[in-house]
Length: 369
Image (tube, rainbow, N blue to C red; front, side, top):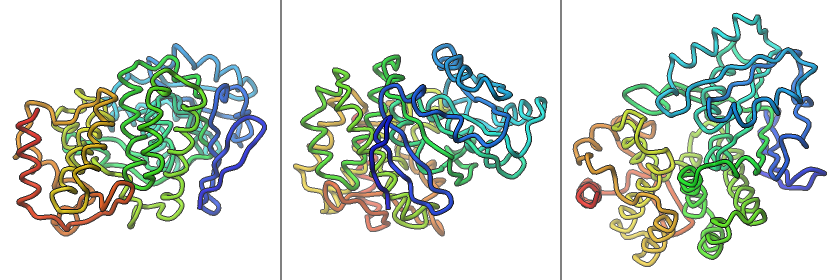
């Protein structure tokens, strides 16, 4: 179970996984206030970041680690670089600088940086510690928490990876002041997701407080991030390796990952694809008689409020979805399973839908784009 408490620097959430448990710090000024050195056991650190984030925050982080051997690698920015080739460049940097099993990797960036750094840490010398410092809203509320690490394959997103937990997650909300509006909106797709799958009260709060979030209200922003992380931590603590209920965190992702793969990971942002995928999942939930029309309309309207897509890319066709969706990790024994809603705030992973209703959603969504 996830617990929340207060510390001298920020609200703190503990992801309860026994000896793999770790804290999440959330708030303004966390990069300086938390004292990252206490989570580093050895004398060597490799910071993994990208070209966009390095210019903003790399030197500030390096200054805090002056008592360590600090190396860094700056990756190209974009989902298309979340690849085995990029992963190998991290391994080369570690080997060239003689990093050992006490080395700590630090992911300084968004979801791509966090995922690939975590996977590198899981693999290097069969596992070294790593720390997440997520700098985008999407990575702060989703990918930095829970230990899912991976790289993409040209045939499928996140198909090569491992479950590997960080030592700590440090969420400095100040980093969001430099985040482009489009990326902030993409992160809101994952925030909205938590309301849809397990927290109807939070969904209502988002309906009532989107204006405050859009205006950058610090209190509203910190609350939305903490509530999202609490929702995720609760699920992860109950099902770390996605044997059951953790899959509900993938609402809209089967559709969304198909869109990203179709675009060769160089079109929409992840959150944009998830947003359109969630609308499709909600429509299918409505067609199978679970979600009411009113609930579907509320979900769609909140997603639209953040200028997020509600239909797939115009070039996609039904057969594109059918081909790509069956490569999803939730497919078992050739049977497609999806995350669908029983009601607003209540999700399940199920194959209880007809192919006719699925095809209806695919057809209407593709024609609407």
